[in-house]
Amino acid sequence: MYIIKVKGKAKIPDYIQLRDEAFVLIAYFRADRPLKDLHRYGLEGKETELAAVIAGLEFGKLQPLSL
Image (cartoon, one colour):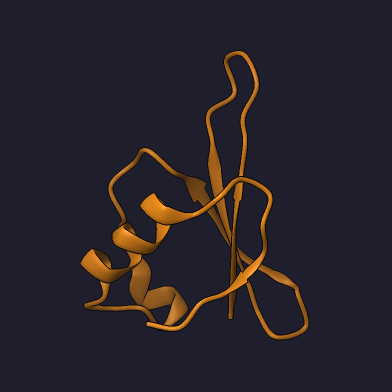
């Protein structure tokens, strides 16, 4: 799974994208909202680790997600 942080403009907020091994978009959520429904993506119970990864992400840089 891969993660990328997308920079918003003006009234559009920053977003986080989760992509699978074929780079297909599987999740798209606001970077400033609490993380929920992570069980849909196989990340249940890893909220704090994912929040730490998101905080350290650079905009526009695709990275492998390993928690």
